[in-house]
Length: 447
Ligand code: GDP
Ligand code: GDP
Image (cartoon, rainbow, N blue to C red; front, side, top):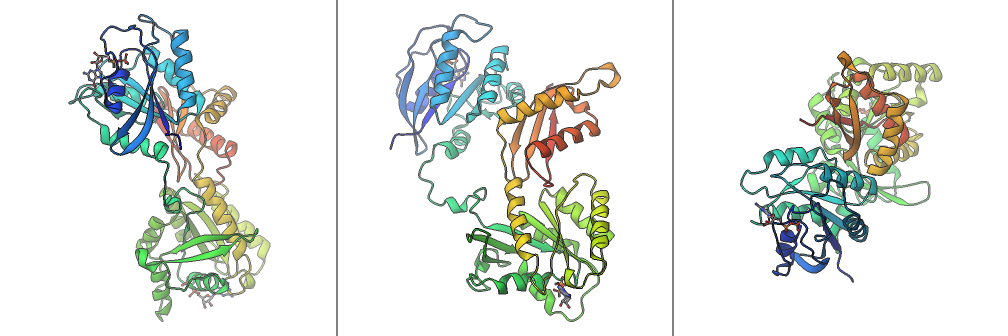
């Protein structure tokens, strides 16, 4: 199997050859203080703390003090980036971010190729401001590095690992994989029917590997398999069921929802089902819990239980729906389903929606797609100019999933009013089908 490839790119004199030499371990390359020394593209096999890969060095195609990317260097860089599994983009942390760095970054953001940003020459504490400046390039947090002194190697290893490690033995353990068990918590006030629902889910499924299975892991979860609509078994881990079962045995239940218990369940879960008792409707406490789930960044589904005995079903449903949209102002359209833990009706739909919701919650949007949408959104509705000062949003990147989180860069973007932030968040939601999962937006104005 061919080795994965890693390209080293960046403007002249940032330390590409020095890094190449460190990775390849042979003093092959000519290192020179003068930019513009002609060198050939070099390749070599690297071993970084046991990670093996092929390195391509793009140094040597630069013109003197070019203000824009010279043609040959551009072609060389672009070819290397396209060929490589991941690119190491170096800036000189002592010199700070230059217009040429910005130009390369802009191009990289448009390609959707994986990039690791490195702030080189950052040995000791030198280059701290350069490291900060590099954050604004929109390529993730830079790794402070010193190619000359070998500082930052462990961080580089970690950043390269997901791109370079080809014998991933336990793909199931990757929580981002759609095959990883869905971690589901069921919360709600006492008597909402949580225990009944859990028992129903487990009792219904012939695939259960025993009610105690999975308990070894954190002693409060039960693993089982739900068979989806295409007859495919899907793994589910019901979290915090131990507490549930114990409480179900207690004769006298306090008419109070334990926030601490709920928070613990939320901690472990990807998707939280808030169970309501349809015979009682939505109460203030339920909204508090729902709000908390969203604040914690978890995906939320609300299920009206005891639907088998609900009266005036449609007005009840619409009433709860309206109260939810009003009460949960920051996220409209949280899924509202009806179930009966006693008859089992609606449980399959609940599971399907839970898997769909996790998928949205874990979704990653490419930087290219994101910025195509972003430019349209800004054009359709330009940001305001508070106090006559123009706010200039420049670009947006997704820095995290689970929940989807985005960083918006630009001049004075920290002054964007809430209403405009909401406009962007709702746009993101619609454009990329995030539904009602919490979406986060962080504003970063350079300097
Ligand atoms: P390239 O043009 O990007 O390949 O850059 P070079 O590898 O030729 O390095 C340019 C200059 O920066 C040389 O003088 C290197 O010794 C110096 N250099 C490279 N890495 C570091 C570093 O980590 N710290 C410091 N202080 N200097 C470095
Ligand atoms: P928990 O405190 O949330 O765990 O609630 P339980 O599961 O103990 O249920 C409280 C009561 O509601 C019990 O008497 C259940 O039989 C009843 N119950 C639960 N789910 C349903 C349902 O879907 N329909 C009806 N009619 N009763 C239900």
